[in-house]
Image (cartoon, rainbow, N blue to C red; front, side, top):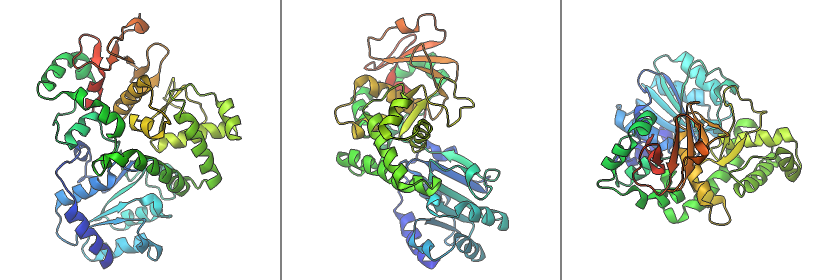
Length: 398
């Protein structure tokens, strides 16, 4: 255990709190004994928990951060570490990358049950499902999902603008005045294309020139390491998933022809739909259904998108279509906060109440004729009016 503290303390000291995502305040850290945070690779889960540990500032020895892909766990059990930690005065144990440890859920459950004064925070892949894990954590853990940076956070992390998030009702009802206030000092459209290309994951700060390469490598690691670890799928299936992603990346947004895709991949229709759900859980695809309530993994989606615009640049062989980028941006900004469904009139239905049509600055309401509570999200517009809202403003929702 001493070796783990030796790694943890310098890591904590190096952790910067210059920019801390608002998400950190959405988590009830103190009242929940068992907290889980999941999200796609690169979303910033590790940084978030280390920032919390730094802010908590517990006395030395009372907190410990470990990553469960550490070689330490090839010869030691997680439960034994937790037990020794408690016996030496430990209070808060943070476990990163838990899905990389075979028996993680059972041993975390045992630690939770056996040591009532121990608080545990764990992070893992976005494909984690507590209800499918060996230990019954679904009744014990409070789960949170960390998404990539919003457009608002992209500006904030670079110290370009420090704006507070706005709610969807406020955006719909008062977007003109909000835009007038925000654009007095900052021109958001000047940073728009940068966000589309490399702004979704915070590691763009390391080197934006190789961001697309790193994003592609991150997806590959998720497919080759995370999926087999969580679902136990074969490497032959991983290869099929890669083939499917290549096909979809060049075609989205699309209404999927499952029969044609199954022929292309030489696999069953049911597996094609299952593979799509895997890619959605990994944060690569976004699947739109006409009725997302009670949806099962066997139902094919009405429409398929890449889950955020950076993927369009990383996975496309040529420059992505402008309309595709607009729709991908809108989905990536809205989906973390609201239920998004497919609709025949317009592009998207939010919370079964609001219809949105996404387009350029000259987009009209023609396709929304007769639709109540409908709005146009218009690209290239700094300030909107009436039911025409600047598309960039949907990047203010979280």
